[in-house]
Length: 159
Image 1 (tube, rainbow, N blue to C red):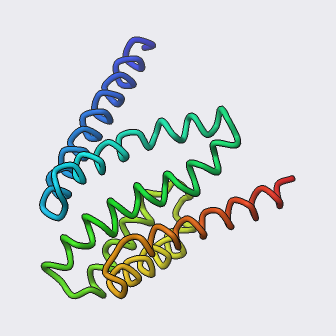
Image 2 (image 1 turned 30 degrees about the vertical axis):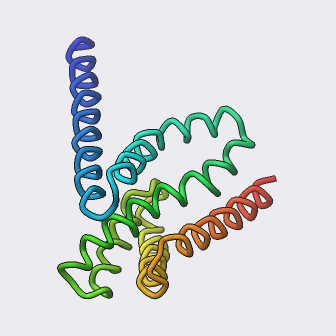
Protein backbone atom coordinates (compact mmCIF):
# COMPACT_ATOMS: atom_id res chain seq x y z
CA UNK A 1 0.00 0.00 0.00
CA UNK A 2 2.86 2.40 0.80
CA UNK A 3 4.50 1.73 -2.57
CA UNK A 4 1.22 2.57 -4.31
CA UNK A 5 1.06 5.89 -2.47
CA UNK A 6 4.65 6.61 -3.44
CA UNK A 7 3.88 5.80 -7.09
CA UNK A 8 0.87 8.11 -7.10
CA UNK A 9 2.96 10.87 -5.50
CA UNK A 10 5.78 10.43 -8.02
CA UNK A 11 3.29 10.37 -10.89
CA UNK A 12 1.75 13.59 -9.58
CA UNK A 13 5.16 15.26 -9.36
CA UNK A 14 6.06 14.15 -12.89
CA UNK A 15 2.70 15.36 -14.26
CA UNK A 16 3.12 18.67 -12.45
CA UNK A 17 6.60 19.19 -13.93
CA UNK A 18 5.44 18.23 -17.43
CA UNK A 19 2.51 20.66 -17.17
CA UNK A 20 4.87 23.38 -15.94
CA UNK A 21 7.24 22.79 -18.88
CA UNK A 22 4.33 22.85 -21.34
CA UNK A 23 3.16 26.12 -19.77
CA UNK A 24 6.66 27.59 -20.13
CA UNK A 25 6.76 26.58 -23.80
CA UNK A 26 3.34 28.17 -24.30
CA UNK A 27 4.45 31.35 -22.53
CA UNK A 28 7.55 31.49 -24.74
CA UNK A 29 5.55 31.03 -27.95
CA UNK A 30 2.95 33.60 -26.87
CA UNK A 31 5.62 36.10 -25.81
CA UNK A 32 7.49 35.63 -29.11
CA UNK A 33 4.42 36.85 -30.98
CA UNK A 34 4.34 40.11 -29.02
CA UNK A 35 7.95 40.86 -28.05
CA UNK A 36 11.48 40.31 -29.22
CA UNK A 37 13.25 36.96 -28.84
CA UNK A 38 15.14 38.23 -25.79
CA UNK A 39 11.90 39.53 -24.25
CA UNK A 40 10.26 36.12 -24.70
CA UNK A 41 13.22 34.35 -23.12
CA UNK A 42 13.17 36.81 -20.22
CA UNK A 43 9.45 36.13 -19.64
CA UNK A 44 10.06 32.36 -19.54
CA UNK A 45 13.12 32.68 -17.32
CA UNK A 46 11.34 34.93 -14.81
CA UNK A 47 8.27 32.67 -14.77
CA UNK A 48 10.37 29.55 -14.25
CA UNK A 49 12.20 31.08 -11.30
CA UNK A 50 9.01 32.29 -9.61
CA UNK A 51 8.55 29.22 -7.35
CA UNK A 52 12.20 29.44 -6.31
CA UNK A 53 11.78 33.07 -5.29
CA UNK A 54 8.86 32.04 -3.04
CA UNK A 55 10.98 29.37 -1.28
CA UNK A 56 13.84 31.85 -0.93
CA UNK A 57 11.49 34.45 0.57
CA UNK A 58 10.33 31.98 3.21
CA UNK A 59 13.95 31.32 4.22
CA UNK A 60 14.85 35.01 4.38
CA UNK A 61 11.93 37.23 5.46
CA UNK A 62 13.52 40.38 4.05
CA UNK A 63 13.45 38.66 0.64
CA UNK A 64 9.66 38.47 0.99
CA UNK A 65 9.49 42.19 0.26
CA UNK A 66 11.75 41.76 -2.76
CA UNK A 67 9.68 38.84 -4.06
CA UNK A 68 6.30 40.52 -3.44
CA UNK A 69 7.19 44.09 -4.36
CA UNK A 70 9.58 43.60 -7.27
CA UNK A 71 9.66 40.02 -8.57
CA UNK A 72 5.93 39.26 -8.64
CA UNK A 73 4.85 42.55 -10.25
CA UNK A 74 7.43 42.29 -13.03
CA UNK A 75 6.83 38.62 -13.87
CA UNK A 76 3.05 38.73 -13.53
CA UNK A 77 2.67 41.90 -15.56
CA UNK A 78 4.95 40.55 -18.31
CA UNK A 79 2.85 37.41 -18.48
CA UNK A 80 -0.70 38.65 -17.88
CA UNK A 81 -0.80 42.22 -19.19
CA UNK A 82 2.18 41.96 -21.53
CA UNK A 83 1.71 38.70 -23.44
CA UNK A 84 -1.76 37.35 -22.58
CA UNK A 85 -3.73 40.61 -22.65
CA UNK A 86 -2.03 41.68 -25.89
CA UNK A 87 -2.86 38.32 -27.45
CA UNK A 88 -6.52 38.40 -26.36
CA UNK A 89 -6.90 42.04 -27.46
CA UNK A 90 -6.23 40.96 -31.05
CA UNK A 91 -9.33 38.75 -30.93
CA UNK A 92 -11.68 40.44 -28.47
CA UNK A 93 -12.59 43.88 -27.20
CA UNK A 94 -10.41 45.28 -24.40
CA UNK A 95 -13.15 44.86 -21.76
CA UNK A 96 -13.64 41.15 -22.55
CA UNK A 97 -9.88 40.60 -22.72
CA UNK A 98 -9.49 42.38 -19.35
CA UNK A 99 -12.16 40.24 -17.71
CA UNK A 100 -10.57 37.00 -18.98
CA UNK A 101 -7.06 38.07 -17.95
CA UNK A 102 -8.34 39.26 -14.55
CA UNK A 103 -10.06 35.93 -13.92
CA UNK A 104 -6.98 33.90 -14.90
CA UNK A 105 -4.83 36.23 -12.78
CA UNK A 106 -7.10 35.58 -9.79
CA UNK A 107 -7.20 31.82 -10.28
CA UNK A 108 -3.42 31.35 -10.35
CA UNK A 109 -2.96 33.06 -6.99
CA UNK A 110 -2.87 30.79 -3.93
CA UNK A 111 -5.13 32.90 -1.72
CA UNK A 112 -8.15 30.69 -2.36
CA UNK A 113 -11.68 30.97 -3.73
CA UNK A 114 -12.93 33.68 -1.36
CA UNK A 115 -10.45 36.18 -2.83
CA UNK A 116 -11.02 35.34 -6.52
CA UNK A 117 -13.48 38.26 -7.00
CA UNK A 118 -11.09 40.71 -5.33
CA UNK A 119 -8.02 39.50 -7.22
CA UNK A 120 -10.01 39.32 -10.45
CA UNK A 121 -11.02 42.95 -10.03
CA UNK A 122 -7.42 43.94 -9.37
CA UNK A 123 -6.30 42.00 -12.45
CA UNK A 124 -9.02 43.62 -14.56
CA UNK A 125 -8.00 47.08 -13.35
CA UNK A 126 -4.36 46.41 -14.22
CA UNK A 127 -5.48 45.32 -17.71
CA UNK A 128 -7.44 48.55 -18.13
CA UNK A 129 -4.38 50.53 -17.02
CA UNK A 130 -2.43 48.63 -19.69
CA UNK A 131 -5.06 49.51 -22.28
CA UNK A 132 -5.23 53.15 -21.20
CA UNK A 133 -1.48 53.82 -20.97
CA UNK A 134 -0.28 51.42 -23.71
CA UNK A 135 2.55 50.08 -21.55
CA UNK A 136 3.04 47.56 -18.75
CA UNK A 137 5.25 49.93 -16.74
CA UNK A 138 2.29 51.67 -15.03
CA UNK A 139 0.84 48.20 -14.31
CA UNK A 140 4.11 47.03 -12.74
CA UNK A 141 4.21 50.21 -10.64
CA UNK A 142 0.59 49.86 -9.46
CA UNK A 143 1.09 46.14 -8.78
CA UNK A 144 4.26 46.85 -6.79
CA UNK A 145 2.58 49.55 -4.71
CA UNK A 146 -0.41 47.29 -4.06
CA UNK A 147 1.72 44.31 -2.99
CA UNK A 148 3.99 46.46 -0.80
CA UNK A 149 1.10 48.11 1.03
CA UNK A 150 -0.72 44.79 1.42
CA UNK A 151 2.40 43.14 2.83
CA UNK A 152 3.07 46.01 5.25
CA UNK A 153 -0.54 45.91 6.43
CA UNK A 154 -0.52 42.10 6.81
CA UNK A 155 2.76 42.07 8.73
CA UNK A 156 1.63 44.88 11.03
CA UNK A 157 -1.62 43.05 11.82
CA UNK A 158 0.18 39.76 12.46
CA UNK A 159 2.65 41.25 14.94
